[in-house]
Amino acid sequence: MLGWTEILGLVAGIFTTAAVTPQIWKAWKTKEVEDVSIGMYLVLITGLALWLVYGIITSDIPIIATNGTAFALNTFMLYLIFRYQEKD
Amino acid sequence: MLGWTEILGLVAGIFTTAAVTPQIWKAWKTKEVEDVSIGMYLVLITGLALWLVYGIITSDIPIIATNGTAFALNTFMLYLIFRYQEKD
Image (tube, rainbow over all chains, first blue to last red; front, side):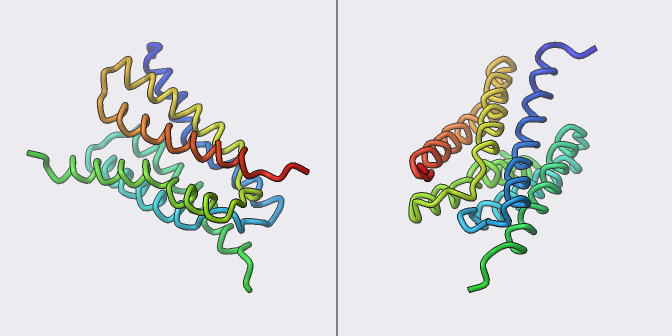
């Protein structure tokens, strides 16, 4: 059974992992990404990849699961930035 | 002394914590935030606040330090979104 502390950590992880989905949805709908920082996603994806390696080295399943999911979601957002950015 | 694994975790934490700073810089410079999702920052800040509570309950200093810093930075970004969003 999970205690309240573990449940709190899980809920926190779900929130921080899923946070980028409203941004993906907005970019997908409006096809506008001009004000979104590419640098932010490059730094974030690098950090998430490092967390993923850290989780694999330390065999930490929650770190692998949350950072792996966040890595995939944020890489998709980076793809949308490149896809929709103005070519001018 | 820190081992390679601890250093990897620290570097990963610095990257994911600092990731929002290029976005803050861009919003500050351009005063344009139309394409940035408010929902993303609301979900993210909620998650970071929950991580902070989790860190305090479990007395985990790295979790408190990284999520506390990220909470402050992302709250400032949310403030910039409200400050610069178009009133139309």
